Every structure is written in structure tokens, then in C-alpha cells.
Amino acid sequence: MTTRFPVAVDAALRDAGWSPGRWDIRQAEIWADTLRAHTSPSGYRHAVFPAAVEVWAEFGGLRVAGTAPGRHIAPTPLTVDPAAGLHWARTLSDLGRALDTEVAPLGTEEGHHGQATALVAIDAQGRVYSLDHSGDWYLGATFDAALGVLVTGTQPLRLAYAAE
Image 1 (cartoon, rainbow, N blue to C red):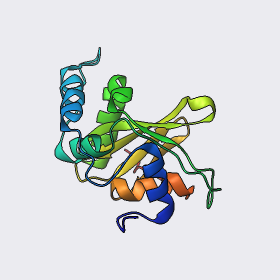
Image 2: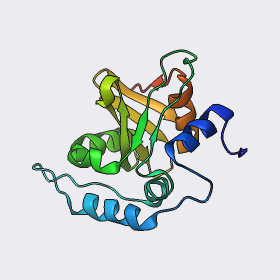
Image 3: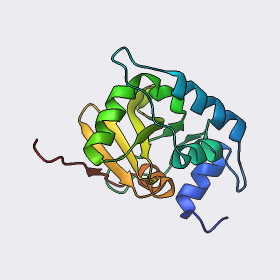
């Protein structure tokens, strides 16, 4: 076991196929190129930055799911696939503007039967967010912390925006 992650998160990662030293920069670059090449019908483009590429390289393609009951809510499986956010360029741009940073897609949270229920995104400082039909949520200051929230079923914080 590593000391980087709590036991439950480490176990979920290993069950998903992760191991220390996992690094697929080639796939991360493919995702980066795909996102950079996409322009929404309204002209929005994706931001690509080191914090996102590093998560894609280490965790890309994994489906990480907790197996124990959640602390506050049910654990939420996460699939790390930034291409799932391809058509969310405007939404991520809007979130980035509200947070005064750039935001890139990481993947999706999954509900029953493996259907995506939320988009998971990261900002240029490495903070992680979830966007779903009920609002925008702060999952943690790092991807590692966000994994802990999702795998252990810890209640995330709802983002509140100042009125414009």
C-alpha cells in the first residue's frame, strides 16, 4: 500500500488498474490535442494546462469506484476521460470566468448503470470540481483529495457565486 492515498482510495485505484508510477503521456497528449482542436458552435475553446495533463497521464482511462458505504452520500464512480467533456467548452469557460481561472475536463461521475451524471473538471491550480444538473461542486484542492471525496462518499461543497 502507498501512503499517498487513504486505504479506501488506494484500494479503489488498484482495483481500477492504477499503480504507483503509472504514466501514459502519449494518451494525455492525444486528449490535449483533441480538446485544443475543438471549437464550440459559439466559438468557445478548451483550456489545456499542466495540472490537467498530469492527471490525464497518471489516471486517464481508469474507472475508480469505492466499494464501502459512503460517509455522507453514496460513493460516486469516476471515469477519467477528458474527451467526455469535449462539448462542454462553453460551460467550462463560464466556470473558469466565475472562478477567475482556466478549467479543463477530467471525466465523468457515474450513476446507476454507468451513465454519466456529472462532468468532473480541474482548474489551472489543480482544484477539482463537479458540474451536474443541481449545481457546481468543489471536490478538493487536488485530484487526490477529490478522489477521496468521491470514493468515500464525503459530501462535497456547493459553489456559491456572487450576484453580478
